[in-house]
Image 1 (spheres, rainbow, N blue to C red):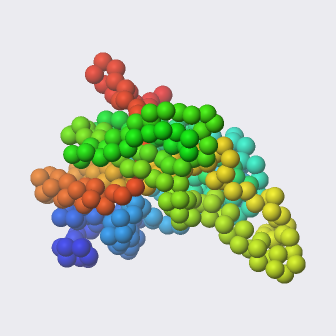
Image 2 (cartoon, one colour):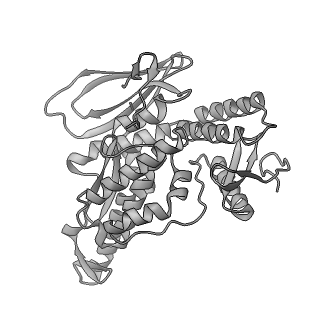
Image 3 (tube, rainbow, N blue to C red):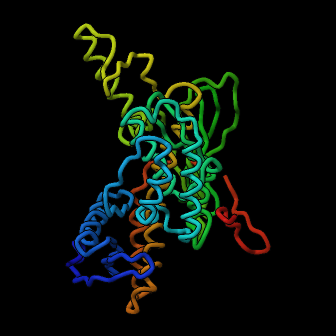
Length: 367
């Protein structure tokens, strides 16, 4: 097959480590894995389209089944472990990734997810939350929690999750990251000078009032420059409509309820059950709203960097498989991709220093 971007003729390779076939374009840094040639080619095309759209890379060898209850989770994870490893963060090694997946499965089995297991939407949201944690390399509950909202759930990653994904391991893009919330009665200063982003909360007032914005910042490892962005509440809510699983279900149910009311009903019917307005919970109100907005802002700002970092790890893994690998060429390509990603970043909050002991990084997943 040919690379759709540069039209280079690609050869099919095989990874003995994962027992998967793969195509990899060294010119463009695009790859696709699969259980056979057809699947590898299909995933290569998906990853090409995702890069063009500036979306995260996903290697979907097949559609994961959805377990019906928490008692099926362990069996589900064991049966799909190869697929889950493929979809998980690539900047940590496979044994650590496997331990992270197993720990998160145990967490989900013990967590009180209210009525989420009782509905199809809820079951799908649980798997979405778990796979999101896998992609970030986040162990639960240390790096976040799965929070129920009515009949669905949402992963709320802690700052540790972003920190681990972007400041640890080999060649991390940032030294530290920071996410802050601004409230209506706060006083603050925001500026950008000579490429450096600056935010200072000069006064915290009580009561603080409604949340109005989220600030995202990060210190680049190579340059020491601080980059960042300010997201106002309206902008983040628009993003939530597109990317938040629980919020999309909420909006869908409220639209259905509004239509039902025009027909003289004060409830909607789903899965042979009646749902009244009190049963439909908005995850972006009350005490959970700041954390939900921080998640949206953090993911919006850091997604390009996570994508590039996973791509780096992806090609590093394949580097050992291909003796003709040209490191100088691929490094130049990746730098160009990163430069392009940086020019497209329009959205921005995270301060945590790298922890070191005796000159060695702490491995958060070591047991």
